[in-house]
Length: 125
Length: 300
Image (cartoon, chains in turn cyan, brown):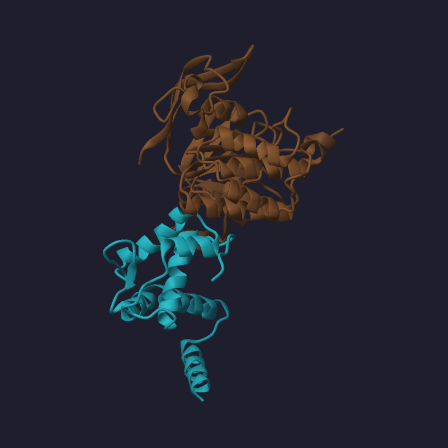
């Protein structure tokens, strides 16, 4: 991952997001260890305190579980939890954005729905 | 978190000029702190008081619960380094490193020699033949290798080229991770440093303006761009720390957290949000009246 210093998203949230992305892509598997605080700090060249905040955010969301000692484990149902939450946040935001754009361009609801169905079909081909 | 440096009403004057003005602060242990401030704001004075080079004119300062000015026996635990440290009687880099080894109990000579190699400095080089950039690099190497419990870097990157600066930041962060200790770095270039810092100490006209976790500072303000009317309408119920109104674009910097509740408001007034980097936040916080407006320079 790469930190976007100009983004309004705080760096520790970006770190949490990218860990979630790696879980969704099976780069990190449920039940296995997550990247450690120091590894994140070393590789992304951020302060360890910032890395810790990213990890703690995911602990709060029950995506990561604290084990004895320092190691963090990916929760057994991490993937479904991430998907459920993203549906309510990222996904909902994108739809709202799309609807707003449709309204600005005077696109009808029916046209929008047809376009979505069409794009779905194309991606499954 | 334990306090490493504690000050009470700490004041320092050079003759009539007050460099530090009744400062009350407790700095946390094992943080990588950026000391930020404009020229003449009191940064160097503060660091020299921490290192026991100066005795307070008024008030008090303790480091590791003792007055640094009086604790000669444990000065090996505090290092103050600036790029102009001049090594008079010692000629070669090798000799200077030996001096550090004798003075600082935790000095890691092997590490120091490895750093010399990284920066293409030879131990047999004569100190007086080094360029300003190389002097800065060498003094940084000496101070970092002491692994002192309190390490104070005053403008460590002075005169360094960009490649060296980037290496210095990377080495500083990594060594802090490997050997956690309290490190304070003063600098004018916060934008280059901010990623590796954990806290920031902003000083202006001898007073502490801000001492905060850097991740918090990152979310303390945001900027909006739009037409003059839109910006003014949006700002009407907010704390504005800087604004600039022009025909083509107007913007304002707002003190407060950017969050989801503000987004619809921005849409209502048609303003665009963007991030204010900690460096810019510090600039806005330390602007003096009239300074923002440079147009007056060319008025006839």
